[in-house]
Length: 237
Image (cartoon, rainbow, N blue to C red; front, side, top):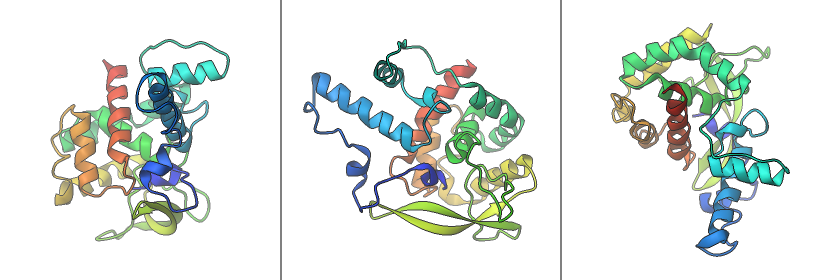
């Protein structure tokens, strides 16, 4: 839903391929050129998702190696290792992620990954007019049957392949527990997301189910969510 808020696409209308693959022409489709292109693209996505020290570990092993090489350091193809701020965020939401996961029939890591993706690991929360957090970690809009508090925020949506800035109304909650419970209830009540319910530990099925239901307009949303959820599952094993 609000993941597009962290996606800084070019101002000029471009297709998703043009926006996310600036290095596609480097070196052709094979060998070093292809690898360079893929790493360049991934690092570009990483930066657009709020990269920097906070999100460095969301890169693939190859991406971290390339990033480290460009910074004059070394890196190994190790497993995903959350930064301290990321780990603190995961621990903070763990009880509510477990509760929501049980209701939805999915692993808690999938719920945690969804919250991390939508909120920039809790570092870019939706806020109200006073600047206070709405605790809306999933970017849920205040539409349909919502009768609770509302906060307006500028967000980015993809329309016909182009990123468009819009001011939208989002749900506001008194605490995190309320946010997670409303998130689970919304998914359970909305038939559009039936394919995500009961996905168990299948990160790809969960992500695809949400994307097919129209959870977000970012054309790469399912890939980003599935990749992050898979990495979190590796950490918990």
